[in-house]
Length: 291
Image (cartoon, rainbow, N blue to C red; front, side):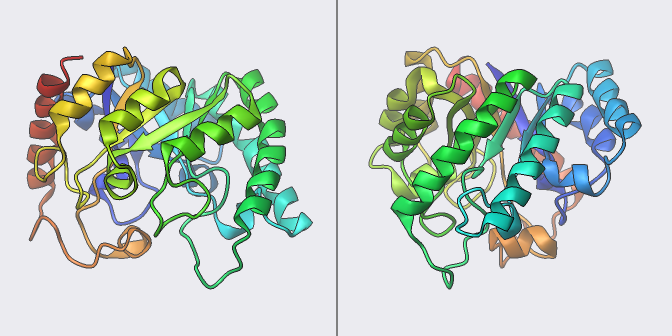
């Protein structure tokens, strides 16, 4: 199993200079850097820039994975045909970029939009039906590009369509593609699942990606989650994917607003302090998981 961390841990905006973070995470003891696909419409917009990032990762022995929360205008389950058309084009343009960069995981609430706006209508079954129909189409592009799309199971405050592993399993079974699988996140599971370890076992071979974070979104080892039980479940299913930390500990900026971080979980955090927490956390989970 490979261990990673999401680059926005260190930033207030989704897009940043990922070449800066690649050697950093390598030095801290990680195998993977996860990046936000927002970067492909803001910073890494040319083939040369994308290949430069790919080569930087290769030179440092780091694997890249990608995550994304589609906007309301990129919602494949919308009732508005124009929005669906725009969403499908976004993903059909994105997947070949990931192939170019040798990125094989795209994870997030890809079946809907994020963050959730509770003032908008919610037709859960109708939205699921539309998402399944359109995900079947996107799955073919993902298969051609060698990208596995992980359907992230989100808590009730951030999503309404897929809140549990059971719901995600039903969704991917309906899509029926080897490139559409389950993405679990300990922060969300802590809210929705009766037992996180059982949810991991239930996902089994369909678990393609795992996000790690405490119940308050700090790095593993700084909260109340039973990491030993989770590690045993991962060993039980012989999990071989990436376990990527997704901590959010700083208020402010777009990230603080969208993640709803209204206080600094690491007071007066410096980059060095964040580095030390990340380095300690990856040592901790490597030891506890034993994978």
